Amino acid sequence: MSSKDAYFEFLIRLGDNSLILGQRLGEWCGHAHQLESDIALTNVALDLIGQCRLLLTEAASVEGKGRSEDDLAFFRTEKEFRNNLLVEQPNENFAFTIVRQYFFDVFQFHLYSSMRSSKVKFLSEFAAKALKEVTYHRKLSGDWVVRLGDGTEMSHSKMVDAVNTLWPFTAELFEKTAADDVLIADGSIPDLTEINQNWKAEITSLLAEATLTIPDTMGYAASGSRQGHHTEYLGFILAEMQCIPRSMPDAKW
Amino acid sequence: MNNSNPADQGPLWEVFIQAKSGIPHKHAGSLHAPDAEMALTSARDVYTRRGEGNSIWVVPSHLIVASTEQDAESFFDPADDKVYRHPTFYEVPDGVKYL
Image 1 (cartoon, rainbow over the protein chains, first blue to last red):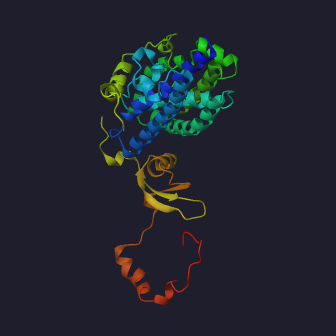
Image 2: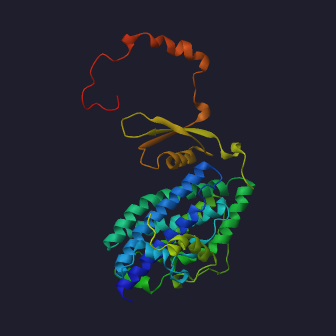
Image 3: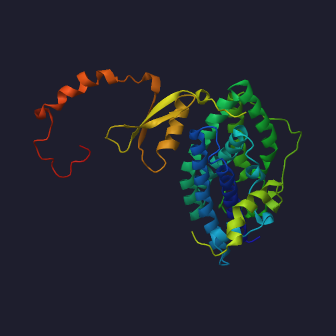
């Protein structure tokens, strides 16, 4: 695999994660249980969309086929998306949304922390900028995990459900492909295996503080997004997100 | 399932934002949060989204001691008719901000 193809794949993966999770969080707008959370989740969504724009713009320019960030976001099909299965999982309730967010925030936090020393200028600058946002996201979701996990009987049981359901989707965050091998070897990106160790240590300790435990999945882990195989939810997200640009491709804001 | 009782949103907090270092914190509004740390987080999200803030204070609303309407006459009226109390007799030098 050429390093250009590898770099494109990596950018699309990060960009799609931010795009799809941003879209998911946007669904809470006007629907959260209190104004404070409504605004907080929407803020996070907007940060993620901002990250996605930088990443997909860089991806489009690396690709060099004249596509724009919007072309990548709105005119690719489900099988061309490389976001992790975790971020396309439905919001369900506030506990699910918070657990999904926390797993993802800690992942982004450690990935971007390491990526600041990438030898690729775009990646190191992007990571330094995005890390400020992600540090806040991780605090917000982590604070909620502790308060809901170690909260009332009802909040605890919803959190247990959320952790048990979402845990099998987390291993996939750290799956490596041929693209990773190329980019790790030339110092462009951190090794996801190391990110995984930091992630696991942090998650384990915070879940314990929240009186929650990591479920035993007996070796099962969901997988597929690296090849474009998604859960049934992504198609619906794309249908909603892409419907306007696809029906009116030349529409301008 | 829906948490429709506003009392369940946690206690009320008053939020004070400092726009720039060196100038006073100003009351921005209030919000609900379960504890002080979450109140700070929410204040950041609700009141400083467009770069309004440099520092935030949150104070439990019940700790604010307020004057009452009955006090208004004795507290504030006596200052109204003493022009010499108001610092309006000198020019403000150019370049002085936030006065």
